[in-house]
Amino acid sequence: MKRLTIVNWLLALMFLAACTKETETPPGSTSQPPAVAKTPEQKLEDVRADIKALKTELAQAGKYFCCIQEPCNFCLLHEGSCPCLHELESGEHVCVECYTGWQQDKGIVKGIKKEQVTTSFVKHEHKH
Image (cartoon, rainbow, N blue to C red; front, side, top):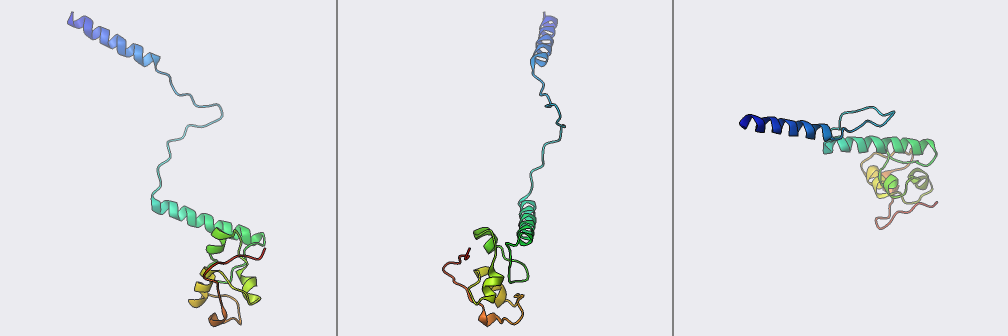
């Protein structure tokens, strides 16, 4: 009787295994291992690379004219473009990040001194 019970269990397991549905790979797709979760540091590096690429793309499209050595993020994130170079040359305010860059001697416009650079700490809007 004991032997019959073991056989029954084995048959039941084989039956269940045969009834389970295999996941099929859709036509044209390749099976890839599951993606490994990125660390916060890796995600941050990805974001930095994306921001740099976007600023380059906008500059090539004539929409990003920053006035500091490392183009600002403020205008990108708040306005989607940067006219601070032209606004500075016209005697207008620049964004707070560009202002800070100038105060740290990171400005790139010849003939302009950091004391001449102004910003509106309340609000910075582009004149589109």
